[in-house]
Each structure stands twice: as C-alpha cells, then as structure tokens.
Image (cartoon, rainbow, N blue to C red; front, side, top):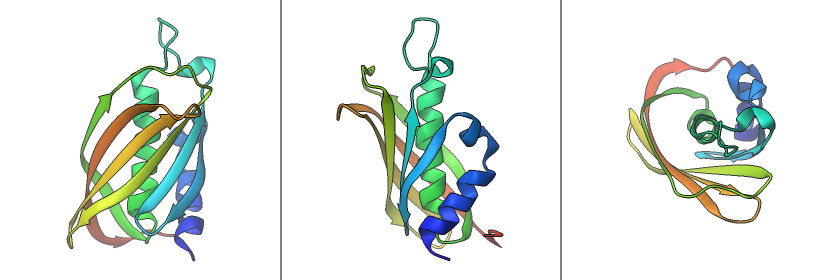
Length: 135
C-alpha cells in the first residue's frame, strides 16, 4: 500500500476530521496536504474561521503525514500560531517532517488559504509507537 492510499484510509476512519469536511489532497512518506472548504459551521461568533477549525485541519495533516508509512504515531505536543484571518473560501494545510528519531518526530505544518495567504503555522511533535496501523 502506498503512503497516499494509507493516508486516505486513515482519514476515512477519522470521524471528526470527516465531519469537519477535511479532504486529503496528497500524501507521501512524511508529507501530507489536506483541504477544508470553509462552511458556516467553521465560523465563530465574529464570523471568522474558528481557531479550533484551523487547528483541526493542521492536526489532521500532521496525522496523515506522520502515519502514512504505517507506524502508529500519536501527538505529544502541538503548538500553533494564528497569523491572520482569511478572506478565502478554502484552507489548505501542508505538513512536512523536519526531524525524526526512532521514537520522536517533528513536523511543520503551514495553513494557507486559497488566496495564497499564510493563515497559521503549527509545529507537531509525535511519538512513534511500536504497533503498526491496521492499514
């Protein structure tokens, strides 16, 4: 199974990400791109995209990238910085591995809108477990 096929199966099993409208665009070893079209349920009381929606997108891209090779990886710590609001209709998160040891991996995730604006940056640190994913 390719990393993209595995990431697609993982995302399909992630009920929260699916119910949030997140789609997998691309995945490879230690890399993933996910998209979320902004809907009314993503907006806060001020009409801006809710920070939790942006975090969910970034965290999902991190999970797809970190698990695409089949090693079960869970988050240890995620730190996100919200840089600006969006006037776009879609958010795209791109996750790339920046370092990995036998047990700990670190990813950088950028969230941009469909206008090309950088909306948020997240650093995700994961713990690589011994168990394999069922996919």
